[in-house]
Length: 156
Image 1 (cartoon, one colour):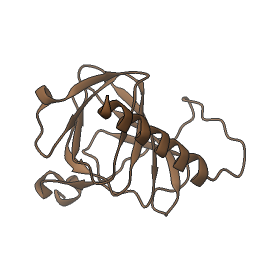
Image 2: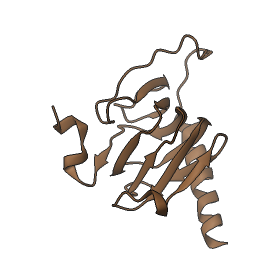
Image 3: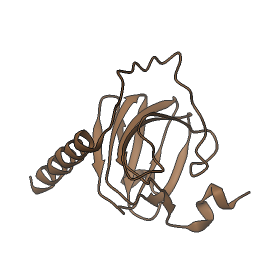
Image 4: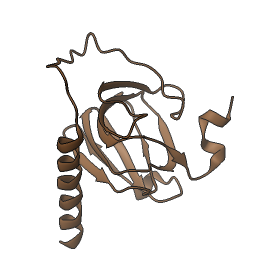
């Protein structure tokens, strides 16, 4: 019960913070056929990111879509600020801690949302299908790997 209340509180906090800090100057429609996807060097090769609103490099709230291919892993890492994630399509394996162990995580289906506190070690993976996530967070956004050797920015 306590865990459920804490999770609900985090989701409400993240949603409230997002609503207060989200800046939109014009009405925008984000059509899947016209979204411009790019790479984020902090994520392993294969992921695609589309920032819909805001700027992750600035101290402001932003909304982004992240697309992971099948059989994809992001090793244990943290972020500097809380995040609210919704699985738009596919499914996402989600585990907590500083060691990747899919058996200790859970697989979340499309339509599921979860909130992560700042600096909370976690890892994610996909199975047999592509997965699209919606991320609401505050910038400047960052991703710090628990094991620096897992950081794709250092493997060039």
